[in-house]
Length: 328
Image (cartoon, rainbow, N blue to C red; front, side, top):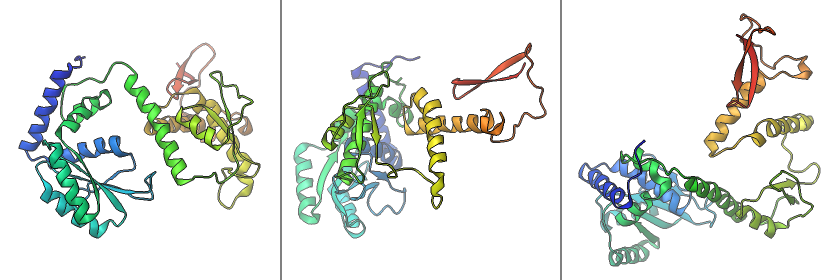
């Protein structure tokens, strides 16, 4: 495995890659990179636009989706100056009525005096607050360990991820903070009365309870909590089938005990994949007492040999969490 280059070498490689994007006029390539960096900087609520007929924005965060209730937009260009920003601002004014903040990204240098002049013009003519992400800002962001994969995939740099877990820890801690901020901005008061109790490292519930401000602080600190609502409120059910409550709650409990509480999940995609693995195991391989030891789905191994006591092997499920016997 190639070692991660030192800071000076990495910076030089990133600058060369940006110059290559400019020289080859690879605007779409830079757009993808800029959207990712903008989401890191200004919020994951920024949603990338389609590559054509974007009405002046390469990414948009609606006011309803933003924790602060302010609409935002991102425009990108590899060589453009103020005239490009003005053209994009005109389109934004015509099509995005909720936008109040405009971000502009470009891989070339923009001095602070020039940024101030651009911001003043955009504020005067359109009423938008302008924030410019220029070359130095982009390079500094790409040098962060969490963007090593971005350097490899988008800039084709031979950079290996940070071997330590520091970047992963930062990502995990940022996720609940963002969710907590969004939740409190959209729902300043709980829709139902909640009682929150902390859980210690061994999974034991504490007798302490949290009020709403304390709950918010606990979420920011990534605390493990149990939330309880009054009976009959906030329960998951199937529409038009009120008697489904006990069945749904039993299934949720099974998934928690046998899957979620026994695994680590790093991203939403990782969680989805592991839940799909458990679904296949639950329906096709896990025996059920209520079905007299059968599985919910008919076995696909009906024609194969059955394992015997003296000759059998093991088939792993759920990344090795469970195993079932098979004929050797």
